[in-house]
Image (tube, rainbow, N blue to C red; front, side):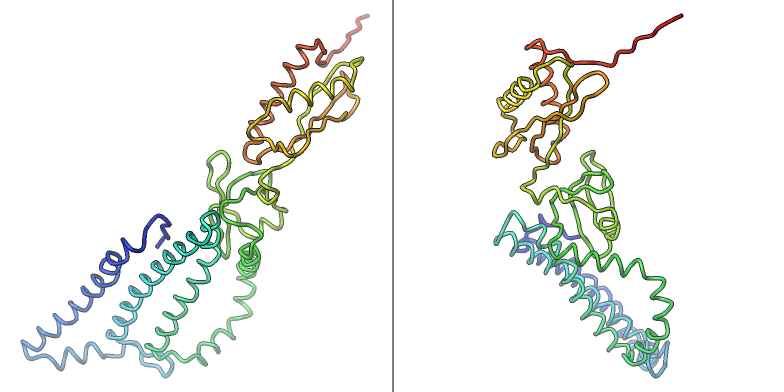
Length: 320
């Protein structure tokens, strides 16, 4: 069951209790009581009791019958409701405490809460079915070697997932992996889901983020340094070009630029056709392409208005 952050606990908990717990359990218990009543009515009460308590599996470390299966199933409906309700309560608490970080705080605690809730359900199930912990540990120990090799990647992803959930990445932050920029939608023990700037939903294994040296683009105030390349012809006054370009871009007063940091223009290299230069400016990470486009447009207009030649490749062909 997916966690819906828009649900309000005070409006939905009664409905969910009836819909997810009382109705399913009522149907199961109703069928059991109905069959019991009919068996009493027709004088087959003893046979009904034998059927319900008949041990489908009767081992020293495992005992299963229909009655125990019904109990385990009813507990599942109850704990499923508890898990969903506690998640909503947790989100409301985080929302009141800090609305900006409510999503990331809830995502970090979600997995821990689910482990606790379903862990209690599992322990109650083990007790109901009389499953011995010693027997379970013995089987687990015997399979540990093979399972260890088979689950190496899973364990590795869980380890990296725990590392990410401690605060390295938060839901809502922008990251870049393998040249793909996206917004983090969800972080689990094994994988991280991002929505790229093109709208694609991409799932990365947690180990992939570390192996490919992911970049957190939101930690530095959400700004990244963009290098905007441009060229001028040989013979141009480079100091004058740097000054006029820097001034023009500053006056642009772009809403997606960091105005608290200075804009710098430098000479990159002496190219084949002209002097290649770069303008460095801090921009909001997901808007980098838009800002670079606007800056290039501004540089082009500035150079054209001041009659500064923009070079382009030229080749001389000599024919004999």
